[in-house]
Image (cartoon, rainbow, N blue to C red; front, side, top):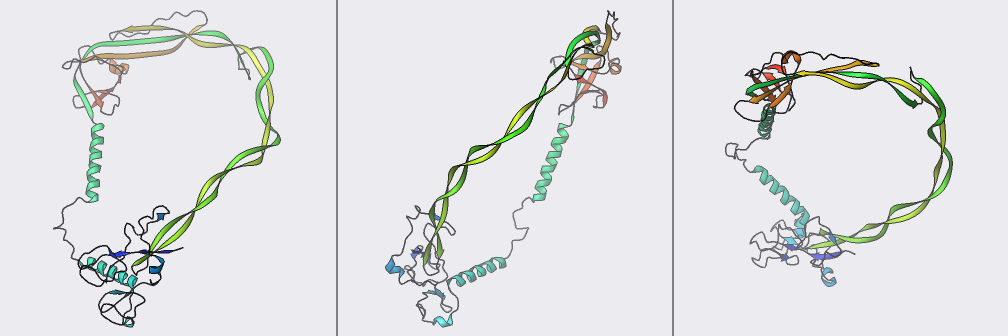
Length: 377
């Protein structure tokens, strides 16, 4: 059931605040209430209150509520004061209600429209008088330039020019493969294999629907447990508010059992022929390596045994440098043979690397690439 709540208003003339809604003249300056807006103490427009959050609400008792009109106050067009809907004449100037048209809410609406029009009519501060501020476009441009500068710096080159070659290294390797016999098995017989046996063996299982069985499954659902009351408050436009109760459902989880038909599958074994066989395969067996520290490179001589052949050939060409000024750890790089042949011990090199960690390279003093490198250590 709705209840009436006491409202309050502030005097716009003397600034007296918190005047009860049943008082029609300011106790401080005597001015009749006119263009005022009623409010509830401690309440924000649009707010909702729970059942246990209404201790500060000031209710009108039944005797007081009996004399309160359900309609808003009417607004006197002559003296700009509010009057009870029960009054036929203005309590401030005596004018007839018939000569006035607006009520409390219409007065508030016109007041808001007038204030909005006055705000719009105020002279705008010229751009020269305004405090200079950065436009969003300028801020975006600064951020973009900063990102570009960072990208260019990260992709920039860092050239070291105080490097001296201290040693050269090369290595050439030939992998020797041996033809070996292996005993293997599988579902297919490879080409060149010598079959020794064949058996029917389990290959896999197929899941085949056998039947359905009834199974009880526990499920849950949300159901209404009870209803709880919350309250909103409406300005009546006459020095009171109406407390309006509302109900909302409170849910709880209900568990129940449901019988469902669940499929049951049978695992059917499937057999296939499995082959057992001997097969010869070329297998890495040993390495033959040659190495040196000069430009006299060569491939090692290979002596092949029975059932052997040459496999993959690999080669690596490296050099080591030290910093002439900064006595740091030596650095070793690998590069192509044709480029390596142009490097000699005691050569002074420029090595350029990007700050992003990209592969370094031999360069001239300006950073122009001469040969690609891979750093080993």
